[in-house]
Image 1: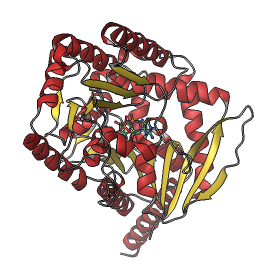
Image 2: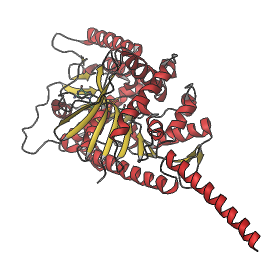
Image 3: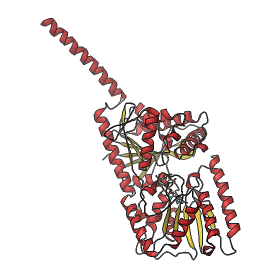
Image 4: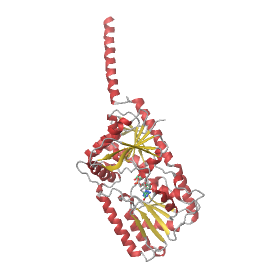
Amino acid sequence: MSRLVMVSNRVIDFNAATQAGGVSVAIYDALTRHKGFWFGWNGQVDETENATPQVAESGGHKTVTISLTPDDYNEFYLGYSNSVLWPVLHNRLDLAQFEAGYYARYMSVNEKFASTLAPLIEPDDVIWIHDYHLVPMALELRKLGIDNPIGFFLHIPVGPAQSLLAIPEHKALARALSAYDLVGLQTQSDVRNLMDFLQQSVFGRLLPSGRMRVFDAELDISCFPVGITPSDFATPAADLPIETPEISRIIGIDRLDYTKGLPQKFRAFGKFLEEFPEHRRKIGLSQFAPPTRESVEAYADIRAELEALSGAINGRFGELDWVPINYIHRPMPRAELRDVYRSSRIGWVTPLMDGMNLVSKEYVASQDPADPGVLILSMFAGAAEQLRDAVLVNPYDPLDMVQALHTAIEMPLDERIARNAKLARTVAKGDSITWSNSYYRSLTKAGQRRIGKVAPSARMTDALKKLSSTSKKKSSLKSHEAHAEG
Ligand code: GDG
């Protein structure tokens, strides 16, 4: 069986108790079922360039990691990845910072990743690269003669083509994508947006096969919605019933990010308390928002905004024995997630744009089927394409948010049971095994298709060209000789 080489910007410590971040959760799950290793950044920033990768093994998982230099961290990670690509792909051009130097560093870190990984690749390996930090990596690996199937999966959404075209280097990024055998996205709408972008930026052409011709490559672009492992969240029958709090809890769990719609959620909650005073003291919003990318300005802004909003709402509606918003700027231990989801009457997920959103699926999988809570889900989360039985909401519309909360609070038991049963079936059907297996199969096929059609590597191509021109010369010589003989 081929080895699976997973590559992502950040490799997590398998032993850490808290592992906030959907990409790590998804990769970790996939690696538990495949032989191989996980390659990427170890999260450390070293003054000196250190090209020697660190190999570690724990619990049957192997990781190979490198560190970044301070310039890499500032210009590749915080800069091009998180201040250009992240906001643009989430359709937040207003927050993008197109600084000189960012792109050059983005390219040099991708070259560094590729040149460190290339010597570790064996002929049968399947290489699966994750996320926007590493778009150019396949092209860099191909330059080094790596001929294996290489796939890309984007965990975040693809904003409209008009947004992507604003990236100064958008043509180079489109060319870099064409070096992959397969580009996987979360939703149908992402597939449409990316195809639209490739058509407009580099005259990509949709072929009758459904693939796209980009430069001289035929690219597979398909959607593979990320799933979770529901059994991690289901309660074993032997477990004691989970204690539910006296005050009905509404739970929010999101990395502190401007894409997650947290100010909209807090404002809507304040409005709800204003319009439905009868619910005061009976409900409370608990929002976990662990910090990420704090040195990026937009993240500091959102933190300040949330602190001000929760303070204002608590100050206005709070009582001696009741705090409306319990806002926690720290991660929750992963082992506690299931119980917290399960004991919460409402799961409130409000991103303004989100690739998928695993929290919504984790909330559904954690519920007691006989007395489940209600999921309120933004129509702009990728998960909304699948979780049609949630209470779908437009997070930009305060009235819709207030109404959704009211609907969820008042929802009768039989409706909660029926909705949750359908949602749980959908989550189970599209679990993380289905996701990684179907991506892996498609990538292997796409790689074989290319290798069958195109010569395996640049070197081979050259060799074949030489061979064919020699044989042409020989055959034309032969025909001359034949004429002479005749
Ligand atoms: C990206 C895309 C896509 C969160 N807070 C805590 C915590 N988490 C865990 C959750 C969940 C994961 O992190 C978050 O996943 P999401 O999918 O909700 O969001 P992103 O981190 O933005 O992930 C996203 C995902 O990639 C996968 O493709 O769905 O659209 O943006 O698993 O449980 N875990 C712990 N404490 C926390 O406080 N332990």
